[in-house]
Length: 390
View 1 (tube, helix red, strand yellow):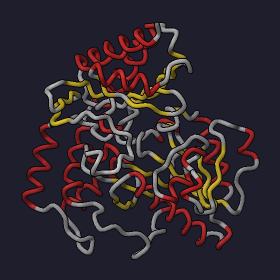
View 2 (tube, helix red, strand yellow):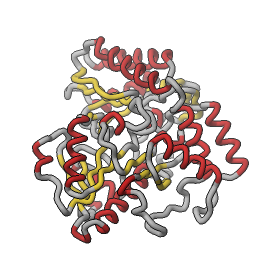
View 3 (tube, helix red, strand yellow):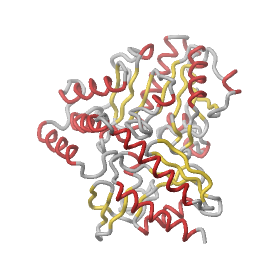
View 4 (cartoon, helix red, strand yellow):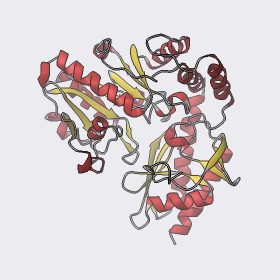
């Protein structure tokens, strides 16, 4: 495949053929514990029966129609998602980058309507990540994602340091259209945002006349132990973007809005051919119903806490820090051992993990992962660390 499709991903040679729960099987029959879930996409794991049944049923009825028309599944999922999240309106897309592009356009239009052409600046956080399109790359607060060969980049993006209180005194003015907060910086290294700082930053941005937006592409849909991570931070965004696990593996994204951000978009402002297909919305309904069942988030939180506590109890000198919320876990490794080498060795031993930030191992397992799968995966991870720490 690597000879036919450009290897933008640096993919491993492993070829998977099936999965069940948090366990994958390759073409040779070898099994792997999945601690990455398609980078947080397979929130209900592999082969989740209610999800499979809903997709099969919807595929037999209606896979796609033009957005010139409405679908019953689209209306049902929109109503359910808005009700669950507390937002008033929304736009469906196909990915996280698309959801963030929609948010960027909404912020720019909001700025224009509430300050003219000078109000166009969007603030993001240092070490954030918002996507791979040209605009979302520029919004990303990491220089490594701004290579010269993709230049020139769009203007109007500035960054501030996360949890830096001093910068809030001067950051925002009448040129500011929006502040975009990534609730936990996943690609940046699973970096946590202080709730008091997030609230103060939001207050400062709003005082300057801007709207506040939350990038929950990775943190949303239960990943951090609540439906939205912004609930925990308490800054009540005017706009939130979602993707990854929103439809359990079917490509989908969403940009939701409320309050003064509602009704900014009008007909023709932002469109997509495939956005909000009946198939994706049918899958999204199953995901949302599963996540909002009584006790679901309690288990996500207790499971994540158990993983972090277990790794801390190993007291291994090669681990510098362990952090995260819910089933989003970051483990900082000493500079002498490369995180990518750990990822590679884990693959050899039957465990799928990913890297993030400078030298961080990231876990994003299915939210329905079993205790047995967790114990098996952690055993592999510990053995790999012990071997590489010698």
